[in-house]
Image 1 (cartoon, rainbow, N blue to C red):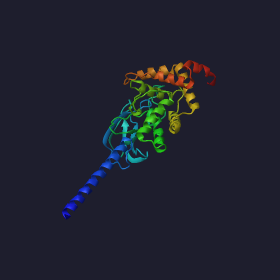
Image 2: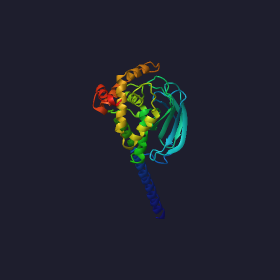
Image 3: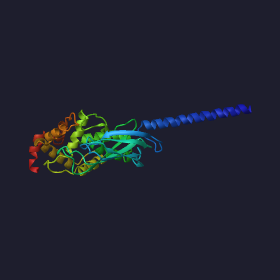
Image 4: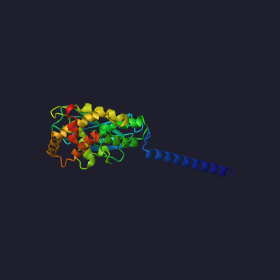
Length: 306
């Protein structure tokens, strides 16, 4: 009888262990499904090679590219760092052997880039970021959309307590809406200014919009302009109306004085570019959305302000 009692206790204990393990497993599964990642999730990314393109226009060969681990829940850097370089004038790069304790990562690139308006390397350097979940991913592009959504994602996760996945989705929607773009597109880190389709056309259009001015010979401080736009979008997903109207004015003028046509010709003349997406349509729509008027009417009505 004593042996039988011990056997019963052992069975009860084993049942308790199995039940506890199932509860823990279900809790972890539900948490991951909601887009969360545990602080001590272990080696979430191991020895991963990631390729991509870095583009304002394409960054010049030799521009440094960095990858930093970032906690998906707290948005704090983990101290894990990996480096690479832009391989050619196309802006392409690869970073090898990425090993992180969390699947989220912050990519960055700093350097000169092809100025779409002049068709030559920029006179000033700029830094762009991309924040992404590397789970099941081997390609990450760094561009203006990824930069403009970066601070918004940080704000939504740390201040609004959204999951990383939720924050990414909302931030991308906010950035597109700021430029009057509607539709469902690929993630920002999958877009390419020289790719086909509406999403890539929108990316190229925004790259042009942050650089247009009344005089194509004037050098725009793109880093300052992008920083200003990023900061405004970060808090509530919207722009200052004065800034939006200024850019719409510049864009209207650029379309009428031939700057936009010139940009297309310069880009089509690059030997590594196949098809330049229809970015002009996005630029024109942006002007119309801001003003409620076609490009020519908007420009003529506001010509005295120039």
